[in-house]
Length: 364
Image (tube, rainbow, N blue to C red; front, top):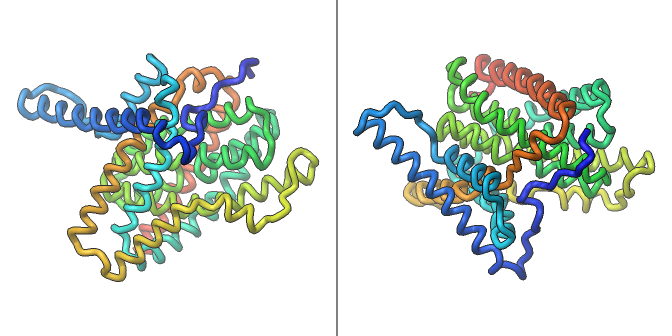
């Protein structure tokens, strides 16, 4: 393990406060500018391929946004004036998820959502158990093992940050866990679509797999979207079901470490669960309920869907901007190896579960 403590991702350096709303404008403008530049590059490559017959790869705008964000963050760095706005990328992500709810009828959410909850419950048990076992085998610090288990089983960096205040880990453990989760998310962006195409997976099945197996919410949705628009929608649903467990998992670890005298006691457990519960899930369900009740016309649903894509634009740009490549390569090999082995196990298990569900007609 290195002796220096890595910096946290940009997204968590400056928390967003209502009083500082004006301070977020430069960073928000940067997020949208990078997202729009990604769209322009996607169209430019399409023109060069079709009209000028150049052999160029087809790269979706969301992937261009990440690449541009990575280059800016790691070559030039992020000036302090932009950081409050860049930190809002999670808000845009959650807004996009809420608006996607208009594309789901409530009966779809109840049917596929119930299946998602069952698969998520299995994924949680296996992921927590496997990461804990691997952490002990490779002799990682116990709280680092807990953070890796929480992050890989629920929603990546968000879950790690939620657990940080509950289990009181060392700063280096938090930074190491975040760096490992970010690295695994980057790997998933490349490997998952390739595997999906090799197996000829349908949009819904692949989207469910991406939502179940990829850690970070942004990377999970992006991994689904790279396969297709419908796959992105189903990844949102599966990931939303997965995120709903965050309070219970973090509470369990908080109680465990408090019982060992290494964390603060949780006195009001119901309040703790409500504080940790991701409120955007309620917005997603509310929009789905309104769409099911016929409140929205077909054109309004199309408009809401279009707005969700605009909300995802700065969110995916933020994925690149908040990733520090120096952190990804400077944390030592053991945490990353534990993460890779655990993620391979979970990816294979969830792939098998999804394959079983769809081939037996359970998900239809």
